[in-house]
Image (cartoon, rainbow, N blue to C red; front, side, top):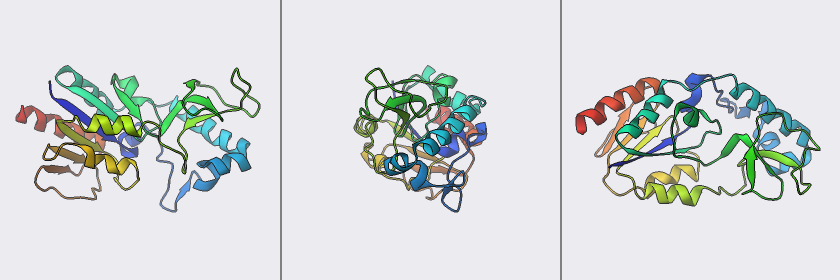
Length: 227
């Protein structure tokens, strides 16, 4: 069974109503990234950071997967599918995808400020003073700027076994995630879906300049014709 590896970014969830956080001016929901997405920001103003992610968590619980999420999940009928996402939502899982690696953490999980690998489900607000059983303050299970990406090695290993690579809704400009494209076997088919693609079709690379929902529909037809 062929192994399809899918890299997804903010454009994957945009049509579900998930805001992409960072606006053209570099602000996240009106906040400087350094205030709400760095360990230093959390140390300086933990209540602001917790409130920021509490709002994001509440919004996530009001939206649903879009057609592209469901179409990717449907690929599991005919292929082994691994999804590596930069998104912190759970929409891939809700749509039925069974093998999802979250590079940047998960909004509906929390961890304590000491142990980055000990995290658990949490859908409610996190408040200052909320602690784990060991007494450490809870924080969002989000990989902030300047922090290690714990799942990166696993993602690299998955990419090395790909027969097909699909990239959806990401500029491929943010590292280390952008480097994953270089870990797939040389010459395999690569499909890039984005309404404003940063690359052009060439050789084994096929660019589909569409939103996620339209682009994945086109991709399914291409895969059907190639099989």
